[in-house]
Length: 75
Image 1 (cartoon, one colour):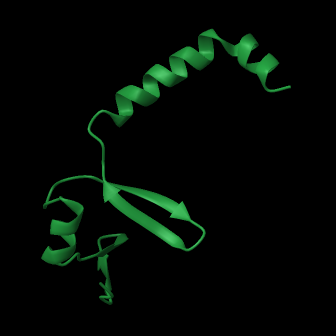
Image 2 (cartoon, one colour; image 1 turned 180 degrees about the horizontal axis):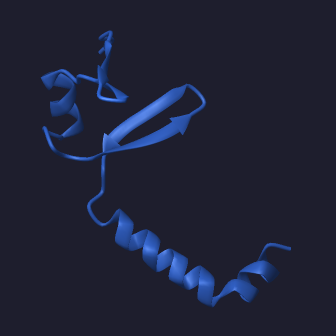
Image 3 (tube, one colour; image 1 turned 180 degrees about the vertical axis):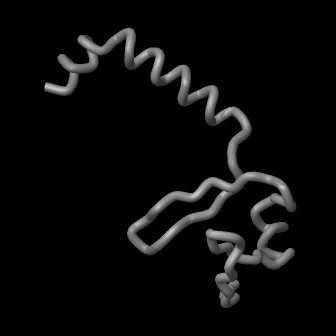
């Protein structure tokens, strides 16, 4: 799929309208959240994982508790 998208002004921000075919490919719909990742070729859009925030909170907790061990492993 190589569909040109137009950037439109939305208040003080800018947005892109995604065609329904692209939303279907992402398994997303209006109101859903998307994850954006920077890659060497540009950006990658994917459907956001619902438990990502909980996983990151758990990882930060472990890193805070095991700070010394992680510092030693980084040597």
